[in-house]
Image 1 (cartoon, rainbow, N blue to C red):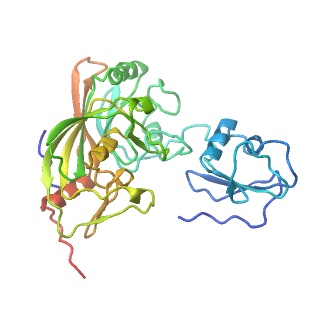
Image 2 (spheres, rainbow, N blue to C red; image 1 turned 30 degrees about the vertical axis):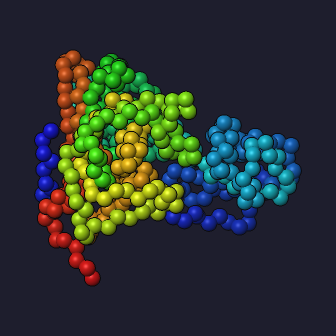
Image 3 (cartoon, rainbow, N blue to C red; image 1 turned 180 degrees about the horizontal axis):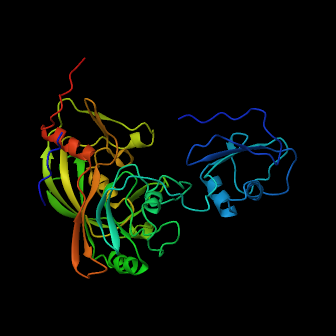
Length: 373
């Protein structure tokens, strides 16, 4: 692999205190990913609360409402209840839910960094803070919205809401992604993902230096027992699925004297143990494709990714520079092209924030060093 070049270089909305009686809805101002509903009961009901809420918010199914209740998104008089609760006269019901789905994808002029394109597929270098496709109430501002604006010729294998999408990267993971333009190209590349014949290479900056500078991590991964959005190392008998990652340390850095490591603002993240000193630039090659696999494996080894506060990393500050996302980049992908049937390797240059992070850790950053005030 070529040496990495040095760079040239919320608060909840207020709701009217005069609550409506049963049948009227108060919705908080749009918060993007959520919607607030509040009801006051004018009479005692025979129906369960899950049935009542389905009637009041018709775009939610009964399963949707029950899931929201299980996740603590529904309260009666400020307290959590079960789906079987029967509302009484005077009860005040608060519910936080995803917004109503839109009926079609909205084309948006989202910048796309195209690495390769022909009549069969497109490869791009995904930027940070970009969700791949609409899901869980996020209907706009996704990569798919940008793809619909960019062109109309995408595969339909995964349905109208995921045109062309062959695989995903986490919201704040950058790097190479493939998008299929035809159903035939989609099936041919998807089969390679299924058979694990596609080789993907990631670059990451981690806290600490592993004792072994190269090794294979073989730890099954499943959903975290306590936090729905997280994954964790789990035994197969407890719901884990096989997950294998090969790592190789490329470079080791001392911690810069002026660097500051900060905890996340979320209390749950602060429960993670303090990461080790120093930093490493690591090449990661996943042999499986589990959700958050690389991030979970590095945390389980005791070397979380810098900036990945969900999985034990810390926010990195150095003067005017602040890095607060997982330092993870999908650098390279090798696959058989669906049209030529020949092997093809594509690379995505590192984004400016990771380039500057590496230059600061190397001590080669050209910008003035921070000074104490």
